[in-house]
Amino acid sequence: MKPDLALLPLFFALLASHTVSSAEDWPQFRGVNGSGVATGTNPIPSEFSFESKVLWKAKLGDGIGSSVIVDGRVFNTAFVDEKNFVIYCHDAVTGKELWKRLLPAGELPRITPPNSHASSTAAADRERVYAYFSTLGIIAFDSKSGDEVWRHELPKAAYLMDWGTGASPVIFEDRVFFVQDDDLNPFVICLDAKTGSQRWKTARSEMLAGYSLPVICEAGGRKDLVVAGSGKLIGYDPDTGAERWTCRSILRTIMTSPVVQDDLIYIAVQSYGDSTRTLKFALLEWLDTNQDGKLAREEMPKEFLERFDTSDKNSDKLIDETEIDTAFQHPNNQAAGGNTIQAVRGGGTGDVTKTHVVWNIDNKSPSNLASPLVYHNRLHVVKSGGVSSCFSATDGKAIWERTRLKNFGDYYASPIAADGKILIAGRNGFVLVLDDKDELNILARNDMGEEILATPSVADGRLYIRTREHVFCISSEAK
Image (cartoon, rainbow, N blue to C red; front, side, top):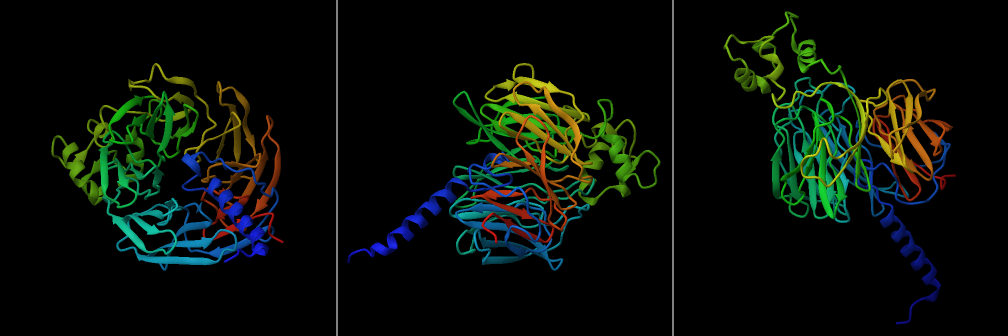
């Protein structure tokens, strides 16, 4: 049979479109390796809103996880009807709903607003999408059909201050990695992406609750799985989970994630309290309901009663001044609060604190929530109040510091970069677009009309903004 020559242009256009989407996938939280940087060069609009440049919009339900985009499909999670988790798959161009799966949540954990029961961002490859739900564990779905492929249950996370879950899975090669840094039994786990079987699991007993995303750093011909946690960066062997190196240079509570450029790992952290403040003050403020300066057994969440009893050395059913410092924070890792921005070189062995910290500045610019962005050798941070700072990625010298974005409010989403622009989403629903220059230049302030806690995503010149209830696809293709 001879080919229909009239159809050849359409065939090649479809082939080119597929090739472009392959290069511009956004497969996990903050894209490839959690960098926050779009891999393609397609232009994105600077000016848009909830009613302008909207290629499509879909109602999802409550959620603060980001969109992930792979092979022309967009995946989002939500929590609906106060009882069900949902994962959605939409066509990236048209917004057509391709499939959705409803999952009964069961008995839900306590959370503190503005967290959501659908707080985790999924991760996807060409075959499957992987989603974490607090009561169900990690579930893999066939990315085309939505059929459940496997389910791996995990211990229920427990938080002394009821923050709730917020960790997300990541994919590297044929593996799924997940870090659950809670206040009870923190760990990092590696699952086989095809079967969901456990390859390894490594305890992180010195960690407190945190939400840092694992990243891959290649240095000296070796790839390390790097995880930030209380007081330290740790590099693990991604094949075995064995600890390769430790850098004891960061702070107590880690909610931001590192980013990697070449063999450097950048992290920016604000951990409440100063260098002399211990965890006990936060615990007493949160849990000491009668404000007598002690923690009584009846004031403790039931998940922590065994830990309480172990820490109650004199068995008086109170944790007092002499017991509280090490009751819930590991005695070998009494990291404190403060502010830091630093660059650490990967590829070390053992304790690299004195050998691999390239630069480290005590600076009040970082957020305790929004992760840093490294783009064209500039490190960007944003914090609540609408305050932006920018530093040289080479030596940490300030380019601009603590400058108002003229959009006051909270910032939970992390900055991202695409098409020579920096995008910063505020909780109040405004997305700021900054020019990628050595001076702060705000190109636009764009009103999406709904609260935003999720970090935006980019693929093929389309910007996907997950608001509290919807997902918007923003594109110059829109009429």
